[in-house]
Length: 242
Image 1 (cartoon, one colour):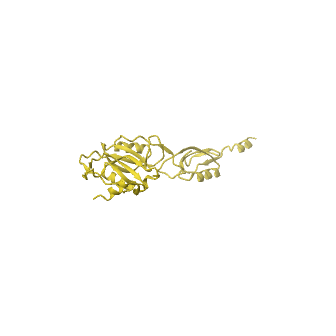
Image 2 (tube, rainbow, N blue to C red):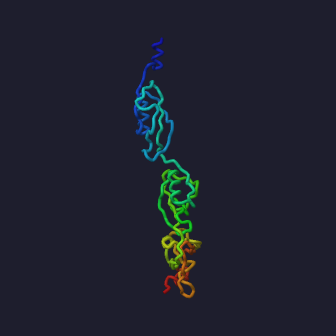
């Protein structure tokens, strides 16, 4: 009777736990079950220093001797990226913002310097071309673009001529000169601003008596958008000015 009880409970039978750390989770489970172990996923975490979907840790440790049917607990690296919260970076120094991003598991994308009195500080945080608010969800490891204040230059510059340029071309010109886009007034038929043209700007490049107009870095310039420059006689006059 005692011999039968021992057979039923696998009394005195032991197994050596194989090492499955670093193996794909599916392969690790199959190996353990084939050797007579029960398997349970104890935890699912994420680290970007290891391959997705592999075993990071096991309990009992490899080469441990345990009774047959013992449950092996696995900690695995997630296959999908977890989501993290976008921190509030605006107003913080660049170095401090980079440290916050590192702790938040985010990376630095592009950096653009814009004239602003907050020299060396983050004045905008952007993701995929648009401003992103603190608390928004981003995939772990996402690259966030930062706009950094470069200080204000007191040297006046000639207002750039934007008439006839596309909105995207105008943005590049303004960024190169440290001028900030102010109001954007678009015709009713403008559906895609990136393909629209500038037909009016304020301040203009020249005043009423054809004298050049100057502006300082960090100041605003308003623009008017259209898809058809011929609708606005003023645009033709400005484009063909001497």
